[in-house]
Every structure is written in C-alpha cells, then in structure tokens.
Amino acid sequence: MKTYELPATGRSASAVVLGLMRIEPLDDEQIRTLVGTAMDSGVTVFDHADIYGSERHACERRFGAAVTFTASQRERVMLQSKVGIRDGFYDFSTRHILDTVDESLDALRTDHLDLLLLHRPDTLVEPAEVAAAFDALQSSGKVRAFGVSNHTPGQIELLKTAVTQPLVANQVQLSVTHAPLIAAGVAANIGGLDQSVSRDNGLLDYSRVHGMTLQAWSPFQKGTSDGVFLGDRENYAELNDVLDELADHYGVTPTGIATAWITRHPANIQVVLGTTTPSRVTEAAAGSDVELTREQWYRIFRAAGHTLP
Image 1 (cartoon, one colour):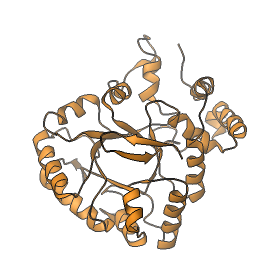
Image 2: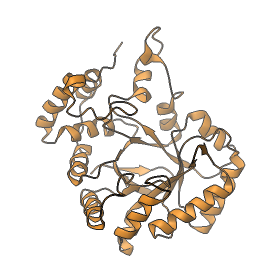
Image 3: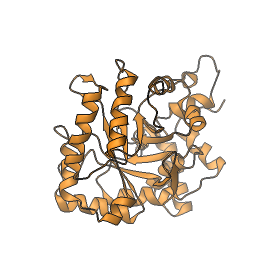
C-alpha cells in the first residue's frame, strides 16, 4: 500500500481510505471482516461522518459496537469524521461542532478523532466560531488534526483568518470520469470548451502549494449520482478497454487501475472507498502501488472523454 505523509501531523497515512457510510445494514462480523481486510491490505484511515446512516451517528455506532482496536492498533490507525450538515441547513457554530464531536466519540467508543473535517461549506460561517471549537477540541485532546471537505480555496482562506491550526486535508469528489478538479487546468484558457471552466477556483494547485492532502470520494463514480463507470461499456467502452488492458499488464484489476490513476498524481491524493465488499478494498490497495507512466495516465484521461488541447 502506498502511503503519504499527512502534512503538519508527523504521521503517515494510507493512500486508500475506507469510508464507512454504508455499513449500517451489516452485522458485526461483516463489519469486522471489512475492517480487518482493509487493515491487512495496509489501510490505516477510516472515514466517518455524523450524518452517515438512517439517523445521526448510526454508522459510527455500528462501527464502534463491532470494532475494537488494541492500544497499538489504535495508535496506528486514523479515525476521521465530519461535521456541519444538519436537517435542511449547514452549521459551523461552536456549539454544534463541539456537541457533534462528543457524540461521534461516544458512538465510535474512542477518546479522540485523529482528523475532523468540516463537511460542506456553511455560507453563514463565522471563522471565529470555528476557531473557538477547534481550539477547545485540540486543547482537550479530543481532535488531533483538522481539515475541510468540499471547500474552495477562498473558503479555506476565510477560515484561516481565525483558525490557527493547519487545515491538512480537503475531501472532494474525484474520479477519472468526474475530474473537473484536474481537467479544467489541462484545458485552461480554451474558449467555448466546457472542460476549461474552473469549478473549484484552482483547488488542485492551491492544495499542492499550501500542503493540503486531497481525499477523493466516489473514485469510481461516473458523475454526481450516475453509478460507476467500471464495467459500463454502454457509456465508457473505450475507458473500460484501456482499464482492462492495463489491469492485465500490471497484474491487478480494473478497480486497481482506476485507483492508480488517482494515486499516480503528484498531489498525493487519497482514494476514499465507499464499498462494503472486502475484495474491492484489496483490489484498490493493490492498485495504489501501480506507478502508471505519463503516457498511460493520459491515455486513461483521454479514454474517459477529456480533451487534450
């Protein structure tokens, strides 16, 4: 498993992250098998959010009930959760952040989160309120590092007017078929081309300049909510042909090559899996070790429908 140094934390993190948003229907043994397979494959980061499940903290409670780490395991793994989405609105108030973290810790049966992310940008955010919450969480030892999710460079800079802790990660949607994060920069300044439109204000380059790790959610999804491209020959025949060919060449699966396409990027992007299938975790982990050539990387990019001007 490829690993990255997580900026400003002094810790190494796996290139593949296991997301737990779909584990609520699983029984304890199924959850333990999923998590155990991930750990055996080198996964050290486990991703939660307070809203995952049929009710708040439902998936966190299932994880906490099923999984018990030894003391040494707990020091090796990173538990991260997200906060800020409520029923019909977003909330980055001090009180909501603090209360939610306490609830997450109780649900996960742990005394600290290794990373806390602000889930979706709250346009009513008061940076000083976020700063107060982060200061309290850091001083109490309840959270060791902080970041954001789905934030633009400007929104991050606004938070940094008050927040003093490094913002070390930003979780964003990215797959080879949903890649405005990358594709816009490749086709910069081309009039009349939709791909040239920047939808995130240069987030990829900003993250590299400022030492923020990007975490790619929905890494195998076609678009925002269109299902996966893997095996979809009706819409992505050329892409799947290329993935199959490279999978055979490197001795991995198409899932592994789709993972490798993301982890090959020098921005050191983590791949957040939402699967509950242990074998898919193993396949992605194997793919993270594949170092695609430039030619292969761009071949996949073009096969996904992106333009090289």
